[in-house]
Length: 163
Image (cartoon, rainbow, N blue to C red; front, side, top):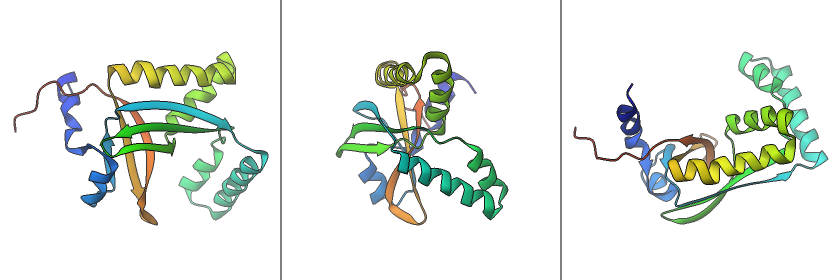
């Protein structure tokens, strides 16, 4: 797929806000944020032990997917993204597994603080200036709660596509 084709490929999923997607009864959307701020806080010992317990429970339940998920090490930080869309400000936990994986890889190379600062610079400067889309979705159990599923480096479409 050419770069031009990739740019327009996701156009049907873009909405101006989470509210617009909700009004359309959609469960997946892409938003181009008007502002973007990546931040974090250390998880408490209690939060980490709760996560470990949930992972062990998933292992005991036996599905292959749950077993694979349970192997993933929980991130010692709660990673969050604050952003503005057409409806105003939002602050969400970052459910993007690639962000956590990048943190772990960079932590080995640069240490935790530097890894987090590098992620912040990439999202807030590099991605935001070059073009970024936030993938947001809901789950069946909580259809009105929107979750940040992914952060995508994606150029804006320069010209509307015909047909």
